[in-house]
Length: 180
Image (cartoon, rainbow, N blue to C red):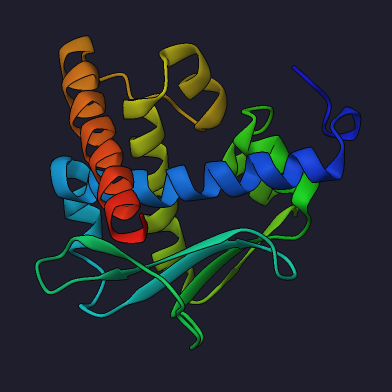
């Protein structure tokens, strides 16, 4: 693995921004296709807004729980989200997004803070873990999550990943058509 200190801050910024976008979109799409994530999201109130960001004004994504208990990405959201998971420094986000440290380990190492109801933060982390277990190769997923789900079969993994990646790709295509 590449130490965070060996990667220039400008490159860390680009990488973390890209990963934050992919994770935000991946989580939204996973909320549409994975039953376990749907179950977790259904426990959030409709209209609940959550975000993940890098302090102070770094890369971020913001999503809202819809009435159909799925997530949707928000752009230009100016109000305070109901829940914010925030990395204290860009290098901390780089450690997590480069799979050198799991989200749980980053919390334990005081590299992240949750601003909002802790039970919702735990739910969000479970959603992120399940999404990562689905979309990442098993070797990377085992580094990214505290405990890789033993019940996740190869068929479930491939099917879930294919659906999520397809929907993420479609979201990028849709965005390029509206901005192009």
